[in-house]
Length: 595
Image 1 (cartoon, rainbow, N blue to C red):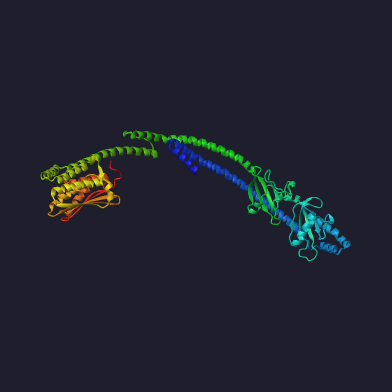
Image 2: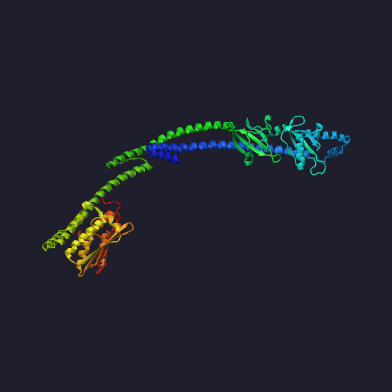
């Protein structure tokens, strides 16, 4: 199994590195010729099987008919021997028992005449005889003493004492002729002297019953349960073991099979006689069947060669026709891969290859359009980033922070000055982030912390802030930079600094499914529902702005998110007068490291 798998893998690898033309030729040959070869193979074998089945059926019919003829013949002989009511035989037996040989003599001729008549009216009967317990035997050959084999048969018949007959194996009779004997009790169940009546049947009758030719060399023979030959066309084999018979087969119930002997195959069929227990067997050389298929084999081979030639020629023609436009398309594709987007293919027709050519042309146009759109999009992203960065690096923000640092230094509060300088440095370093578009969430949070710290130092204790990252694993995810700071700035200047109470800013991060959310919440003055709806409509693109500076920070954040993640992502506001404002941004999970 492993070897077959390895071969299939090797063939698959070789197939993959071939050209399309080679693959088409191989495929046409494989799917055109192989099914035909399989069909021819199975047709040949099916015809062979059908012919074999026909011969087997014929052989079964032959042996069944012979078995029936043999049983009927033996039954006829048995009926002729059923003479228990014959007056002359009964008188002959009584006189013989009384020892009246003189009186017995007058029935002898009549009895001899009756037995002789039986040999004439029933073909195959050589002799009819009566056998007595004292060994005396009367037949058409006269009165004589029976041989031991005859007495053994007598004892067997008398012991069984049934109204049925026994058929012996072949033997030589009184006149040394090969015969089989049909024997039965003359008067079964009688308390008087037991007498056996029998008839010797010439083996020639089996010649006439089984003398059917099966082909040129097929023939029929008869064996007993042990495989001993009862009858065979070659009389020399009678009495020997048959080389073609295995007694296990005779018990299996299957009545036909193919056997091999001395390198040759034979079809063997047999049936059993219920009267004698003998097996009538037909034997036909299998070579005679294959000889009849020789012509079919030659015709099949000729058709295969013709089909092979036709398939090869058609394959070469079709592969060239099909691959020519594909090779042209391949050439133009290679040019397009080398940045030559001026290519255009022209293929006539309306088939799949022509449609593929049209799709290729559309793809090239789409690529050129996407490249232009990508260039414009990148320009827009850089522009928005620069605007966001410029918005953070406002002169008054820098001046105020530097003035605060100078104030700390003049008041000898170098520690606070040092912290503020460090926070300002981190703020600008994280803002620039080596020119990268994407940063880790933890860096964006750090950027907001530095901004909040600086603003808190500037505005004193007017507000507090809380950073709440509920799902810590998002800290190592990536996001577009400079998204949170504009929202925090908006919360400070448009929310908290406009109320006369202690302010609170909460920056919260969490994950829902495959998306990441950030909330920037303040407890400032808030906005009316009408104002909130207006801003959200602008963010959704449903409304325009009268002035480009209107909601600039919010629009910048929203547009950069949508450019990166699509229309389902962006910024959303929720607020009410006196209840503060919540700004929520939704971004997707980025699968790379932001490089």
